[in-house]
Image 1 (cartoon, rainbow, N blue to C red):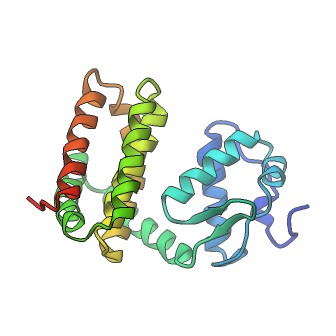
Image 2 (image 1 turned 30 degrees about the vertical axis):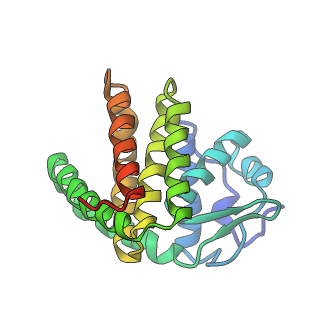
Length: 216
């Protein structure tokens, strides 16, 4: 059974947007301090039963929170709350409030400026492990070409791998926030004809430049 103090993890979620509802419930539990940094979430099967959703929904929510850097799944052990999770969640809320008042064009412009700096740093600082991680994410994009949702998730994974290779924790955290805010938009725009192929080709060029240590 779920620990009694984790009340937010014991109530069924609404049926409209299940994955988002599960994500929000887990985030709220962390923000309220009912489960702290370094602690483990209850098993996914127990969470699915408590929330009244399928196991696949809990897995999808967990994967999304892992991409945001809030959770860290560990094979054979479970899912752990990352050390910076509460701070990151509070920062996301504050920035989201500010960005909600901005127009989409300004947000995308900010993303473009940040990405330009991140990729330049990645070209200078990426290790062989970083390059392998970026390439693996690109391969996921290619493998999920016919699945818009899976492609968008792989696209986010690719960009986070590049951000990680930049070796600047502050910039990476801000970039995670922007990607989180734009995640639903990304899932919609990838359906534009020709966009996914152009994206893969462009990101292949970025990977090659990072591998060749060409920041320009």
